[in-house]
Length: 152
Image (cartoon, rainbow, N blue to C red):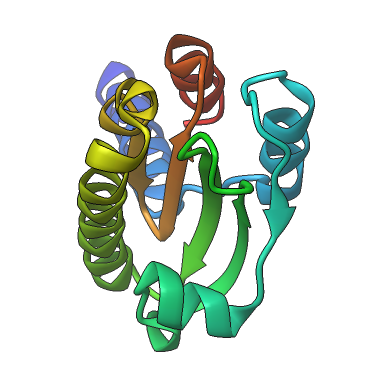
């Protein structure tokens, strides 16, 4: 009887372990976007941009993106943010690389134009988990990182 109970316990434990491994990470992107907007992270006023701006100005491969919310400031501060959902984890890794290139481009642009913006850009939050990519260039990078960590 003890052997049967032990085997049953092992099977139950293995079942729980295997079912939890198969679950993909899901991010409530709408809640995150709302919290970013409401968190008082930015000096500038930001506005959402279209897919054509994301593709041409930001330089992201929109064919890898399933959904996105991207906001850019007036150009005075180097502040912007994005919450991006990709079609696969591999696509998300590529989009993260493109976001890093965007960060480099922003830095190079603001280096002579607005050097006081450089800390915002160089300390930007760039995170990728599963199919999601998050980018926040803002005045309060520590607060932005804490917010992102709460969701990831």
